Image (cartoon, rainbow, N blue to C red):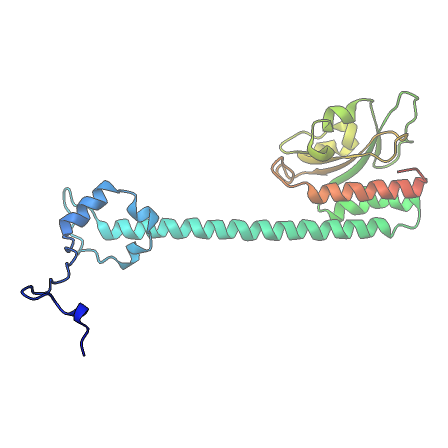
Length: 247
């Protein structure tokens, strides 16, 4: 039996469901005028639109060309972002591989002399730079390293002046003229450099590992320094081990 509660009241006919009034073309046009950035939020809709045939003339907007241009710009931006991301990833991977090779070369040294030669000679090839030098600062007691190939004496206070305000004691510079005090006779080759402060031991003079490149933008302030910082810490450990110095 039918449910009495479901039956329509006597004398009244059921009301039809109200339908949402359809939007006219003028309604859509008015909405788009009020929201000129609509397609910026929904760019995929441009691909579904059917544009009228293009009839050029005074005051006529070439909508198909506009749509194609917007899509082309969007694709170019996405392609550039993708290429930049891939290039950054490849560059980071290459630097990481070089740092690993450099550390292995340092650990394979069989004497302190070979260790120093590895730093000042082999690291330039491994790190793809033109020069690698070590600078050792003079101290108040007059203690200083004996100058040799790739090793230079630095005046007291130079390290603090160069790297005192640098993040992690690492200074990256581009478009420079090489410093003779750091790179010696090879300073003329240097157009960008990376200076890594080395804190070898409490009683040891301050030291500096310097990479110099003839490429003016190989090193610059916007680069990450995590891997270079790791290399500097490994070098400190190696120096302490060879010289039997306390940490």
